[in-house]
Length: 517
Ligand code: AHR
Image (tube, rainbow, N blue to C red; front, side, top):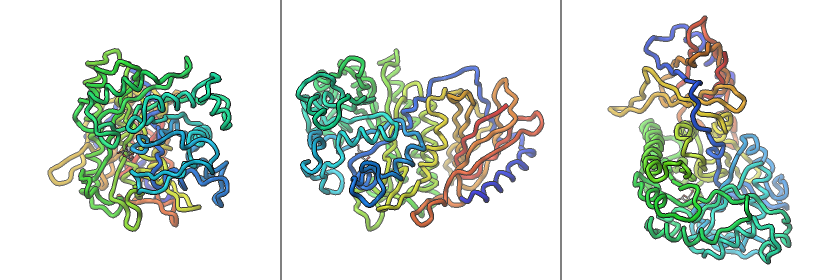
């Protein structure tokens, strides 16, 4: 999308607004009934030892010709700082359940080489380990989510890793950290006890994992006041037995249960669909799949509301995003894929769902941060490009720690393909930390713009200011050669007289505006 073109779109929208039809969708926000806080950790990211996600994508080493800050590529760090990443999950994923933390400490040239059996069978030289991870989160101004190894590790290893990271004593483990150059303990916001126990983490049944969780968690100790939130590995389908069994049977420390869901256009793992050049029915199917997130959360919340009525437990969607067929000519195990306007819409739809369930969904991590699956950033040696998904994270920053506001949609529109339909518009409203009321609108329809009337009870709105992401084609994307094909443009609309504010939301777009009186 070109900025100039976009301004033309806005000008047209202002003209249209005068003629808004009576039966257009109308959103009424009630700012007098504040809901849950939209935890900033909903905007968390995931960086696994996978493909070029960490090596090359984030870490190039001090001696690299790529400009770097102590080994971290400067361009990537600067770009990520712009979107205010609150939390980073590391080292996996499936990788976590084979990771030996001791491999990644001490002098880099003495660290052992292992094989990354999950992702491409490549050699892992452990140049990026615990100290590098914490340096990364410090550079980003983010918090740390460390995922422990339950699958192939043992309670002692997990307990000692936690002690290494958080300990303040003179124990041999903490002294080792000091010897390796870090005196002060690090802060861990979340600690995961295994990953995908139902799959790559050990193919377990929920009851067996619940017992193992109790076993491992018994030994996970930190100095008083520096306890992370402990995360149990939960389910991934409409089957809520993981949430049920864990919330009933875990007696040791557990602050939340995780959930993973990936959006595959075809829902078929053998042929997931392409990241670009897809037909409209795959646009539709992708958005349909994405909106299943709402169903998954509702089902699990129902179980949690029964087993944990005091709402002590969080429901953490700590892996989500699109997953397409591997790109031709690339190592399939590296999960590198292009990222288009469709991904931007997928990200925004997920956020709107997460906001709606902010009372339980306190944390999520998109998979993944750089060069893997639905990434923020793609790199090719010294080149870097920001994806449409990055720009959605940028627009939605105003929702970090905002207070969700209830709203109603009258005359909701629908987007139809054949005899199937989806909602035409997805919305979310909140009062930001700066006191302003923000509204996000996603137009799912790739063909029709929509004219939406917006009202805030008790307020006379005069204008909306914000930013919009759209493009001419469903698979518009940025490349290393053309990095600005799709970037946000400014958006303004003014109310006509004392009538409600009318917003024209272009086809296939994501809009975030501040509503002003
Ligand atoms: O994000 C890629 C992989 O997907 C993760 O390693 C695993 O947890 C999930 O199956």
